[in-house]
Length: 62
Image (cartoon, rainbow, N blue to C red; front, top):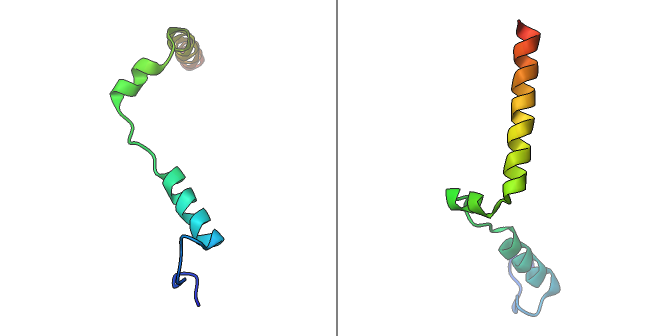
């Protein structure tokens, strides 16, 4: 039998593994509400890094 035509796919280890992997790969879509889960310290650190990058770009182009 071919890979897709097993008589009992629940008992077949390769079919069970592919079903588990497919379920694990299915992710929830990104939502803006997910940003609330990011700690405040990471927001502050990211903001500082962004300001440093922008300042370096401005200095280089002047």
